[in-house]
Length: 257
Ligand SMILES: Nc1ncnc2c1ncn2[C@@H]1O[C@H](COP(=O)(O)OP(=O)(O)OP(=O)(O)O)[C@@H](O)[C@H]1O
Ligand SMILES: [Mg+2]
Image (cartoon, rainbow, N blue to C red; front, top):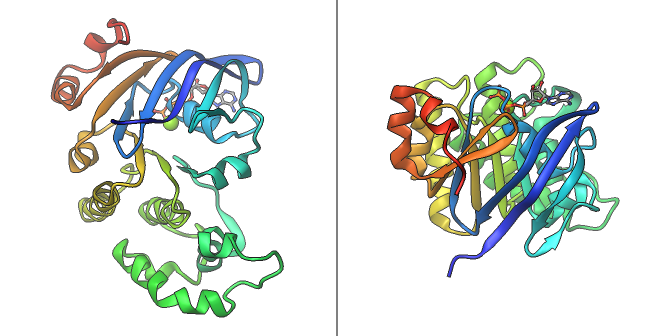
C-alpha cells in the first residue's frame, strides 16, 4: 500500500504580514511523482519554501507532517537532514564556495562524518570519480571547480541546482521549475536523470512547473493546481493537454478533491 511521506494540513502561511497560502491540504505519497501547477504568483514556491522551513515564511495555521510527525518546530537544516530536499526556482550565487566542495559538504557520506573533517579529505577523494561521473550525466563537469553559480549561465544554474539536491539523496525532492530556461538537450538530460531516480523507486518527486515536457518524462501520478494561495484542483496527467490548450480557467473553478 502506498504511504504518505509528507502532507500539509490546513496550512496557512504569511510573509511580511501578507497571507500567501490559505488552508492548503496536500499529500505526497512515497516514491510517487506529483506535479504542482498554477498561474504565476499562486503560491507554488511559497508552499515549497514553507515546507523546507525558510524563516521568512510564517506558518499562521495548520501543520506540516513528514513521516507521521510535525516538522514545524524543526529548523531548515534539520528538515534537510530528515530527507527533504528543495531545488530553488532562483538559486543564489555563492562566491568563495567551489561547486565541488559544496557537493561534498551536502553528500551524506560527508554529512555523517565527524565534525572537523576537511573537505576533499581521504573519503572524499575516494568519491571523486563517482562524483565526476555524476557531474558528467548532467553535463556540468566543467563547472566543478568554479564558485557556486558565479557566472553560470541560466541553464547551468538550473542543472547545478538539481545536481546539488540529488547529491543530498533526499527522501522527497521538491524541484521548483527544474525545466525553466533549459534548452531541449538539457531538458532531456534533466528529464532522464529524474526519470532514473523515479525508476530506482526510493524517492518522492514533487515537480513545480508550467510545462508538460518534463512531466511527461516522469509520468506524474498526481497533478495539483494552486490558485491565489489555495489548492483548487487535484487530477492526473490526462488534464495536462486540456490545460495546455485552454489555459487555467476551467481548472480554477473546480474544487479540490
Ligand atoms: N518573502 C515574501 N515577501 C512578500 N511576498 C512574498 C514573498 N514570497 C512570495 N511572496 C508573494 O506571494 C505570492 C506567491 O508567490 P510565489 O513565489 O509562491 O508564486 P509562484 O506560484 O511560485 O509563482 P511563479 O509561477 O511566478 O513562480 C506572490 O504575490 C509573491 O509576490
Ligand atoms: Mg515560483
